Length: 306
Length: 304
Image 1 (cartoon, one colour):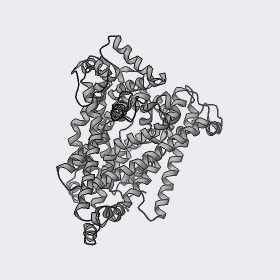
Image 2 (cartoon, one colour; image 1 turned 90 degrees about the vertical axis):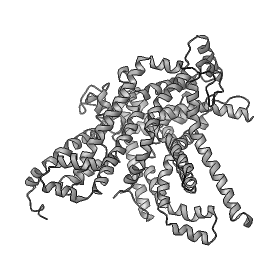
Image 3 (cartoon, chains in turn brown, purple; image 1 turned 60 degrees about the vertical axis):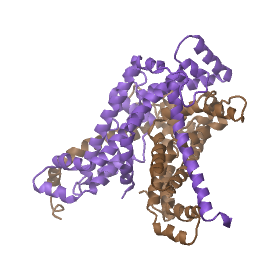
Image 4 (tube, helix red, strand yellow; image 1 turned 90 degrees about the horizontal axis):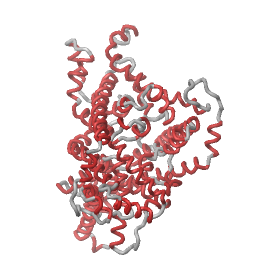
């Protein structure tokens, strides 16, 4: 390698164009993605806007103490985790379910049409999806109309006003929006399964269901695990848009998730340092979750992300 | 159970499978068709309920009302602008950095890649980001729509993986002929990367078209910076806050009030029409999206 012998300064000069093409964007990324992390110091202060970052009152861990003694914080943690787990479980299950259904259908116009239609909700915004959900569940909406028609209920039900249903509405609307698109990746994994396995199963006289159970599902196991790991890292995200758009005063106690909590304390109540502390909690737990999940999958001898 | 084996068993299985797939199609499309019918139905008639697939009394008043609203027109313009600017700029800049990282001899290759990859795991959070944006003068500025997302780690990795799959000899021979890095990027790499770049332009554009959170956080006090999604979101919020009024009777009395006030357009019908307007561009580019995203996903799946 001749490059190794070239002095560093000489290489810098030779690569000046590469540097020019990348360093400005690296500076941009450092400003926009790393400066906010440096801003974490504000959670050890009683931050007042209008003063410099270091010209503030230092309060140590007071904000974190307040955070961990706030009952609403635990309520938020519960909601966030509950909805994240519901969405993860239902989303994974139905994506695999749809993938299997499509995979069992022979190539043709029917298969292609079903696939094309099933992706559509993925590409529309949550704002649109939320409006569809609200219309569907409205007092005079489609669900009430249908249930009244078949005589299950007499009077319309205010579905969106029932706190005990909110998590499930989030879960089902998540399934509606993502199961078709989520199926793609499992379908791709299914095409990688050796067709000889299916032929052997046919010779053994295995039925369709047992083929799915003994060949298809084990074949996509690595994909399932890798996607679960990726999603576990995002557990505390739980998607705030969906909750923000669907929540209302009646279900407040079950709808508030971390991002909304931070928004309410930070930008509405002006408790900036407190909200920043809540944000740090969220980020740190997320990173810990990602690394833990990765370690677990390493132990299991499965593929890892990093 | 032995009887069910063989053809009969397969037949039952296939029937159930097709019924389930038809149900999937129905449940996916029906809400859209219903909202389309509502958007073209007379708003006062809609209040009485029961609209399913077709409008009962055809009317264009909902759309007319929206297109006569200067705020909405402004918001549409902003949405289109941010989508086009951010989609193109993001893809170009990300591809440029991705190219430099694909050059094995580049001295800063590993540090830069690490800086990017780390951003996939650590997030500074809402509040520090807000104060950073404020310090940079991005609050109530159109710039907040395109400056923060000029490059991103995920797309960078996707494009770099694609570039690495290109034959090295192309770049080598260009170098021997004296082409510089910028020339190689613009004249060789970009044309060869069209499939992956098109995918990323489309995905970024869809993302920007659908995004409303930044309008809400950073631009909500300036109506001239509003976007279509945010306008629809505000309408949904006001519908939701009506729930705080608690009772069903309340909801019905508001509907009555809307009827009596003689105002021809109701919030419900307006929301329906806006939903259709916001969804239409996505449906229009859908064939292209579909063609490209499989490629995009397979490339994304190839991680080292």
